Length: 443
Image (cartoon, rainbow, N blue to C red; front, side, top):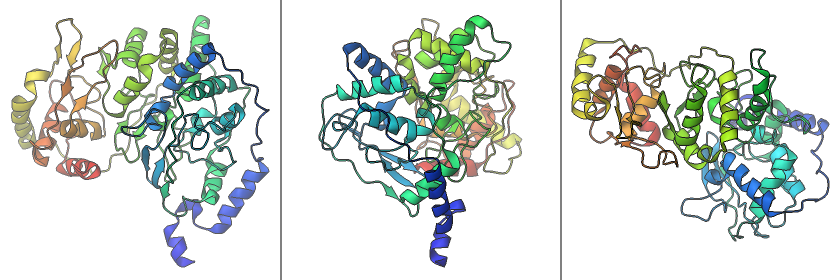
């Protein structure tokens, strides 16, 4: 038993707690199957489902590299092991061909599979539980319209006890409650919001907190992988990926409370706005999902995001503060002049293309550059930065990687330089932070 206890963390340490969690789960009910199949698919319903599947970015996780769309097989890394996405095509043996819309709704709303098994929260049912039955049915109708692909689902590779249904029962008892089907994701509108904007605000809340599952990245998580209560959209390090998802509640990070609404819409639909551009995991979200938002839905999301109460948020950094030194600034200035100034300008002013659109972002006054946690800046210097190709920005410029050209001291120095030049002020970057970024990604 002592060996087991050493391997099991937190509340999952004892089998007694696991049993208590399952009892609590049973007391809440076994998530009975909804009403019998009543879905009548139509071309309009399929088209709506295709749109909603894009809003939820379903294909990103449910398509393996080089594989058929929605046939599953993509390995999703988590702190607890590897979870493989299942086949969503209508193949009867390996996909959803034998499922009903009611069973699909239960998976979305309650996080249970066709046979009643608890699903792993790598499938973000904490967010999808807010999706309406009507929207779930539309997505199901679309998935059923796809060509069936016979591709068996791969077993997950998870450490004990996370591989057990008992552990999932505990997790759910602690961190998951299905939403009220009669009350989809919404939020009381701020009193200052104009009455005419309330419907857009409610639609934006539904999209952001439901299918859009923005909290999956932009909310900090505890040691058991659950979103921290009371910290919704307050930013945090994305597990395993180790990109910082900045706070949507903080105007100094990724909050858009002070932006013109048109710029928020532009960022969602093109990946570029006068104040910012998207890179890293968010670039994939824009490429695969938000660029396809209808104008009304993009505006609704903008209304909701702009109405979020602003809160200053400083994510904890993993390193002790590094003192700013003239030596680092001088070294960084030389690296910047040799490698960066041609695109970003001698004064960090950036460059626009012939049409006047942002081509290379300015670094002066760039809030992404001066975040308290420099993780993203270091990652971009090492790995490069690539904007998504969208209908509104079909041929974006990119930044090449410097991981093979610059050593850790040069990367730290140039990062420190851009964080403390042209009016920017932020803590210096140490070589240990660069080393950790390389180590995490095997660079």
